[in-house]
Image (cartoon, rainbow, N blue to C red):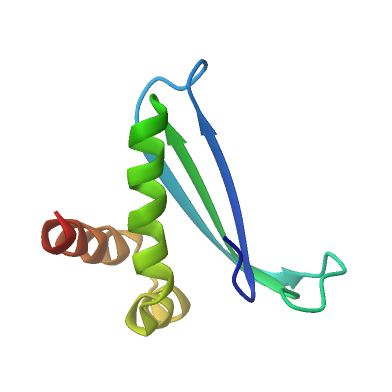
Length: 95
């Protein structure tokens, strides 16, 4: 899965204690030499304890990556709790 301006990293299995996701919005986007994806502005990291949960988390992330409101919030919010609240509502809807 690859999208313009986005970097995705993931880990599952040994070494992961619990399900988690981190989101970083880079103030200064980075170029990696990919004509289709540069510059990278958004970084999403997933961690899951089991492969099947990892796949579920990836599916949820794909839904977010298709959501223009999500990117708007990432670009404009000054409060991480606002993003967390948005994700909590989306999780309930995707449930």
